[in-house]
Structures are given as structure tokens and as C-alpha cells.
Image (cartoon, rainbow, N blue to C red; front, side, top):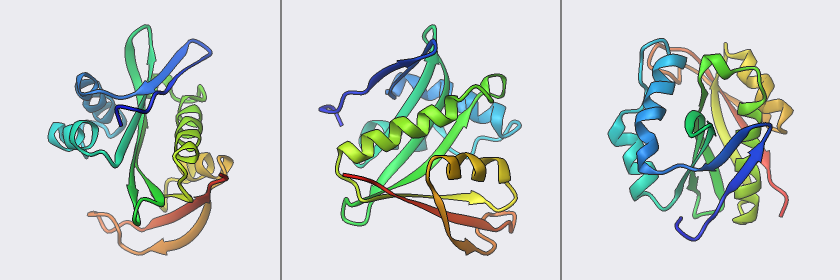
Length: 162
């Protein structure tokens, strides 16, 4: 990952690859978005950001403060990328930050020669499904009782252009 550079500014928001120093901010974003819960621990983020060469995280920041992030992991013999998480502080939602994070990740994965991107999203999270559809993701299948609370997930995919 050290050879990959990503620096992009859009409407006062700076997008870049995440580093270990960002993890505390990512945890704060999770707490905000998930109402006090943190689905990923410091150790999870540290493993993915610092130790896993097959994982990529992009952060969005304003004036040096991280306000959102997206993560992905390469799988299927290096051909596909799976979005592991996407979150933006509630105060910054509705400002196209999540859309731009997805766009940046699509550009990066296309540049790396990946064939497709996948993700799962809660079946009842129609807002997120709409966001992903606007970025070209399509529903592939239903994953019954996927989450710990028994909720269903929808598996979505996007073919990437090379």
C-alpha cells in the first residue's frame, strides 16, 4: 500500500488514504453513527490499516479532522474488492461525502485492476441502498439472517471498468 497515493480535494473536503493515527477518529465516527456502538475495535482497524496489504481505507477530512471513511478488502485471488465499512459523522451526512468516498474507492480499485466491488447492506437500510445504487451497484442476492440481530442483508455488486 505504500506505493499507492491518493490525494483529492472536493468542496473543502480532503480525501486521502488512512493511516494508524486516524484510528481514534474512525472509532469516534462509529460511535456517532452507530449510537454508541463500535462494530470495529481499535485492533480491527489497526490490522486492516497497518498490517493488511490487501485492505485500503480512505478518509475524508476537513481542516485536518477526519469526518468520514470507507474501507475495502481485496479478495478472490486479488481480483475483487469488498467494501467493509462506510461511515460519516451524522453532522456531515447529506453533503455528498459518502458518495465521494465511494467514488474515490471505485477509482482506486479500477486503477489497481480489480474486476468488481461487492458489499452487504442491511435490508432495512434503504437510504444506504439508494446511495450504492446511485454509484452503480446492483442487488445480487438476499442474505437471510446475516446480522447478529437476525436482520437480513442485501449483497450488492458493481462491475469495474478497466
